[in-house]
Image (cartoon, rainbow, N blue to C red; front, side, top):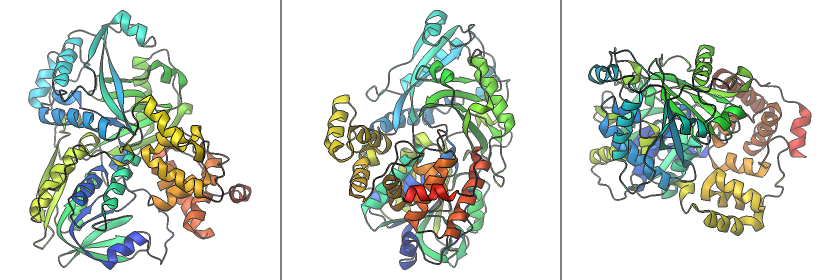
Length: 586
């Protein structure tokens, strides 16, 4: 995804996070790029007591990290690429995140429908050897069985998930009766889904900042150049420019790594990302057909296909197309047609059409430059490139690659190299450190009931349960806030939310623009609950919480409408009906 369109409105009053950077314009480490890997590195360094700053040119977790398949997975298909180290690390990190972030990372049974026994026997070894030759073909039962045996072998750290199982045609159709009737086998294994990746990333930001004043961060602050041996930054809200001096600089800007390096006087050609798109469908028949798990396979064109129930909807993806980083990454109509064909390929009796699309999104994967290597064979592993901040002696590290599943291990690696640069050593391990609302999260029915009962007197049992699912154990802070609010009135057009809860998110979770709330602090847009009435009501609450003028509110609504239409296919009106605005504040 390219940088979202943001409001043209500006304020001469600096945000506290920006003012905090300007008041102390030096740090041991400056991390540029607030995607999942930059955020995790920020957290890791903060935990070591390093004086560290994180800046992000847009909102936290709003670029490539916001365009994922919502999966925490080992990457069984990477075995064919020969990326055994990555698969081992990914499987181990998947199991670890199920323990460290149980509020957002959930086990996901994954089924591969298989339509032949020996398909791919010839082409797969050729592709393995060359990474570019050999016509892609759907994998047959033999190849998939061998792959899953290898996959299971990497998951021996306590049995976090069950081993894979094979089933013949009859049992497969008993479990998934809407599958294509000529299915010969199915193979089912477990990976994991991250239900709300943006909120998980936000938990990491808050974990870091909770360490103490040594950890500072600001969203909507971009790196635009070098001033002497300092990095020149710009606050995109106020337009204020200022410099930060650091002993080391870390570039974690993902697909934009080369552009950032160019701005910092150190041109590079590390990146060669590919575009991946997804659609979200409100299709009850397809939701039911998935039987609570993901359907996953490799199409004849070599692209990975996933269809799975998520947050009450069905996520369908993904494409793997060459991309131009300077152009907006959007899900095209051709990609939508492709997705519909994929669904029909697996579930031919379930109709899908554009009226069922509630959300679409696209992003550019932060992959390394790959020349003529086929996109599906480009390494999903990561590496760290050392250099110097342009024209200075300040050491700089650029992250090339990386994916959601391995963010903890990657950030540990990147933090260790950074610590070495500044003459520090690791004092805290993150291997067993729960994340955000995963701290003390109840993982049994009895423990959940106990937690809910302890908070039921404040907001009622049903709402306490919903807030626990939404925020993990950080829900206790939300409950304290809404309980103390003068008026905890439920929103008219957004079920399950109150104005006090939305105000809490805006005031405590670094919301700067209206899109921050509707796209990343909540999943309202993702699940199709952001209709015109909801948009109007929420914009009024955000405006009140941030003290926007009428002009600022109008600018924010217009910018949000542009973003939502361009990147997500949501058609809303920028003009707000006065009666709706009044209804929220009455």
